[in-house]
Length: 108
View (cartoon, rainbow, N blue to C red):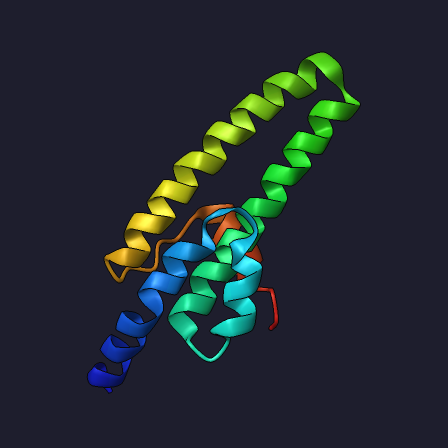
């Protein structure tokens, strides 16, 4: 059983790291949907990306407060993206409190 998990992590680690690069999570979800490690990271990356896009749209709708919100959202997105990339390359599954709980509800 442990060999299967290690093999799955080894095969999915590069794809999992790739998923955190903006919209590439969609391609990882489509291409590596049978790899649970890559799918876990791709779903988290999808939630992060959608959250970042919402921040950017909010900045367009509300000029001053939205700009502050957009900057903070972009910083948070970049921090979570770097953490996700490094943890996926190390074979870990990080738990981001709100992001992971939403990502786990995505059915693919």
